[in-house]
Each structure stands twice: as structure tokens, then as C-alpha cells.
Image (cartoon, rainbow, N blue to C red; front, side, top):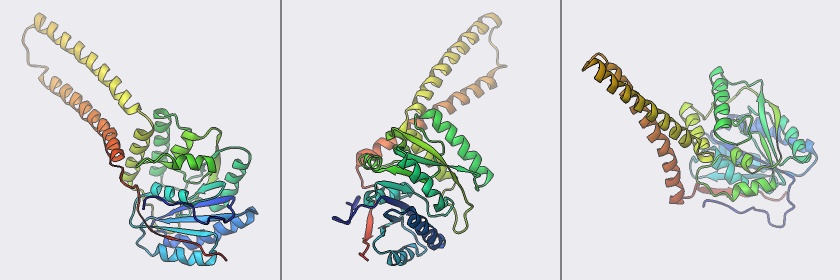
Length: 323
């Protein structure tokens, strides 16, 4: 089952929904729950938390069900049949959420729950999207440098207004969430869709904490894959840049051929430049292969869209019981 309707017909809609994807985060769930519920209680408004277990193998589901028993009317648990990825887990939870303000946060405790009131305050001031950006990041130097490079490339390749695309601590108005859910794309990036639909977004500085338990689920390949999906899903810039490079290379190649023809007429046959020409040939071949790879990314996206396969499969929805 690829999607689900909001549960709790006839139940008062909460003001805040917190959406949390979970994948092998058993060490962090209880401290996250304690800190998060304390923050939400102090907001002085109605709230709910929607967890999506993304195929965890470390007992996270059992822990989530224990937490649900502590707050049976406010905790929802969605269980995937296997791992489908962070953004699919977020999408499933967004479909289940009912709040007027929807907040996304990771389960790894690196985004402190105590920063949530800043986002809620920004939404109350009239912004439709409040995107957190991390100050004093506690990641490795490699991750910080890679993040800066990726954010710079994304800002130039797309028109998306996101200061820190890797920060999942964000708040959305309900109308933005509804637009995201109407997209029906098999590959998507939730913060980017929100930035695309937002009319009055704002960036909010949030703190960042070191990971205490578990380990990051994003290795180098997944980070590269995520950013390929982001750029090819929201911009045709790679194709346009490659077309421009092709035109420039073609012009330079024509000039080189003309130069060699003139040189042959003036100097006569020679072999001194053979290895230079081989090097130039390899360079052009590298450009061609890169272009084929870029086009392949777009073709692959089209292929995945036309198959119309469900983006995720829900094993079970653990419905909350009224208190």
C-alpha cells in the first residue's frame, strides 16, 4: 500500500505534527522522545508525533510501540516492509499527519528538539516554510566542506531557495504539505519541493549537536546519489551546461583542425604532435562519456516515473488508542 489516509476522523486536528523517519536509531529513540515531548508540552498547544520506521533491524519498531503506549493518543507509528529511504519515510508520515504546522526532524538527535519553538514562531509570523540552517556544525571537516560545496552548486544549478539543504529540521504550513503530497513523484526531495511551492519562506538558525548513538546512514555514495537526484529532479542545468561545453569544444576542435591543416601545408608531414593529439582525443572522449552519463540520469528518472511503481510499501500502521 503506497499511501494512507489521515486517521482519526472526527478527532480534533492538532496544531503541530512532528514527522520523524527512523532507520536503526534504537539508541536515540528514548532520549529523543523525552526531550521532544517536553518541548511540545511547553508549546501550550495540541500536537502529535508521526514516526516512520524505514525497515530498521535493531528493534526500533518495538521501542516505538513502547513509546506509543506512553502517549497513546498522540503517537502514530508507520512500519515499512523494508528500507525505502529517508524521504519516502518522511512522505508516508506527511500523509498520516494532520497538524496545521508540520515539522520534520531526524531521529539521530543531531537536530536538537529544543529548536522547534523557533520554527513554530516563524510559521506563526506568517511564513509558509521555515527552513533550519545549522550553525556550529558538529560534523567532520569532510562533511562540512562537502555540504558547503553541494549547497553552492545546488543554488547555482536550481532556483531553489534553501540555505542548508541537508538540514531536516524544518516547518511547513499545511497547504505546503498538501502540495508536496500532490506531486506523486517516484523520486523526490521534500525540502526542495517545499522550497519550490513556498511563497514566503524564511531561514532560521538552529543549533547542531554531535551524534551520540548509532552512526550516519549517509555514506559518500548516498550523498552523491542524493544530490544527483536533487539537481536532475529540479533543473535542466546539467544538460544545458553540457550543450554549452559541446559547442565550445566543437569550435575549438574546428580551430585545431584548421591549424593542423595549415601547418601541414606550410611545414609538411610530421609526427611530433601524435601524442598531443592522442591526449586531446582522450579529453574529448571523457567529455562525451560525461555527457552520456548526465543524459542517462534524466532517462533513468523518466524510466522510474513511467513504471508507476509504489514508492514505498507499508507493512502496518500502528494506530494510536484514545487515552
